Length: 244
Ligand code: OAD
Image (cartoon, rainbow, N blue to C red; front, side, top):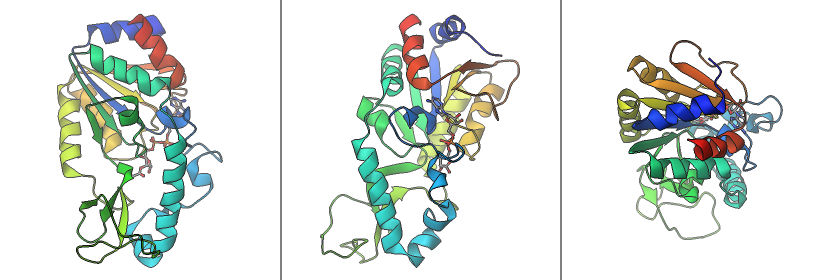
């Protein structure tokens, strides 16, 4: 059911244990393109199967590294928007609050969120493609991608590529939050990519109320205990926190 701000604020006031899942939509107002908005999204400019897979990386390591370096540069210029900041305030107010994100831009942490579960990694981190260990520093020899000082394999972005498993600890934590929360906010996600897409509905089945914050209800589920607050997160979340 579509809620108004007052109705959504009441849900927040009554909540004792809040779980949140965010997607690319919450970073849209920071100028970072989402994935699937027709012809304006990130995929309008590239075919994900071409670059965001281990096969593509092994086939064209330099191209994949440079494509992520270009995205990392753009993301580095982006700033958290009022939607990110409102979630920081919400974390401060609510007794138990866990923010699960599909985003790899690190903007939740940059905004000040502390309890963040990154399901799809973080573009600002680099890891060894062979050992899967995060690497903080490497020799700039001019070769791209750089090489791991330990095993000599290429370094890669610490993000989940298509066909790869999500980080197990993050996934387990996300399931636990969905099962234990009493209010689950699904913000700025098309809810199309598993296993993240299942989280709001797992929470609902576990007895939580679900509040979807998105300009559209298209592709989202409806039903008892599932509410929709339609509009941009960067406007709705600060307004919501202001009246909750
Ligand atoms: P999508 O691009 O699939 O969906 C973006 C969602 O944000 C859509 O539902 C939009 O309606 C909504 N949206 C747009 N602007 C918004 C705004 N200002 N405020 C709130 N919502 C807004 O992005 P994700 O759902 O995040 O995975 O995509 C999920 C995953 O698919 C990504 O993490 C990525 C991709 O494959 C990997 O790369 C592993």
